[in-house]
Every structure is written in structure tokens, then in C-alpha cells.
Amino acid sequence: MSFALWSLLMASLLPLLWAVLAKAGAPYDNRQPRAVLAKASGHRLRANWAQQNAWEALTPWVAAVLVAQLMGVSPMTMDVAALIFIAARLAHGVFYITDRPTLRSLAWLLGFAAMVSLYIAAARAAG
Image 1 (tube, helix red, strand yellow):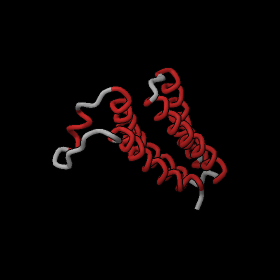
Image 2 (tube, rainbow, N blue to C red):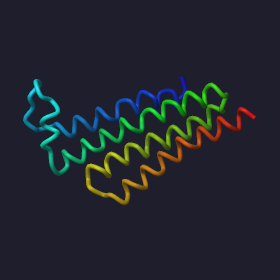
Image 3 (cartoon, rainbow, N blue to C red):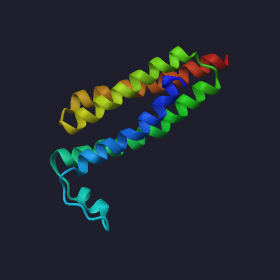
Image 4 (cartoon, rainbow, N blue to C red):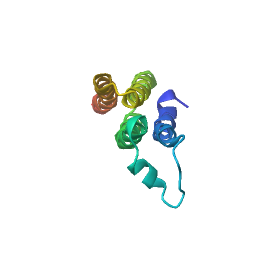
């Protein structure tokens, strides 16, 4: 299986990673699991925001990979885009949590460009 297809699983796990960091060490009530994050501040709040953004980025990424796959985009093109996307999304979360907004925005833009590149490659492959 190609790295691009594995990236679907990786991108699906990123929100969970940020959620763990948001909740780590905080008081937890399984009856009201969102209440802890509603009161979060500092790095926990930013980790929760990173989690939310990672969920938002997941759907367009999955669609881009599947469209590229269906249209016969070369595996190398897909894998390079996937590597860039996953690295950018990891960096995005780290920059979010460590409160580096400019770097976070640049990482977001890089991940977005990787996703768009797959749609462009799919359009070219369609002829």
C-alpha cells in the first residue's frame, strides 16, 4: 500500500494525538468529557484547537487522496504530496500548541497546498 493511502490513517490519528495532549493531566469526568476542554487554557486550549483544526483538515485530505487515486495520479506524486501534508500537519499541531502563530499559519498553508496539488494532478490526469 502506498504512503499516500497510509497517510489517510495518519491524518485520522492526528486529532487524537492533539486531544490526548489537551486532556493530559487535566481533571477528567467521563460523564462530561467536553467540560474539561471547555474550561481549558494555555497549551491545553491550543491543543484542543489543534485537534479541531485537524478534524477539519481530514475530510478534504481524504477526498483529495481518493480523487487522485481514482484518476490515476502517479504514486510518486501522491506519496510526495502525502509526505508534505503529514509533515505540515504535524508541524501545524506543534506550532499551535507551542503558540507560534506565524509558523502555524505557514504549516497550514503548506498542508493546504499539498492537498490542492492532488486535485490539480487529478485534473491533469483526467485530461
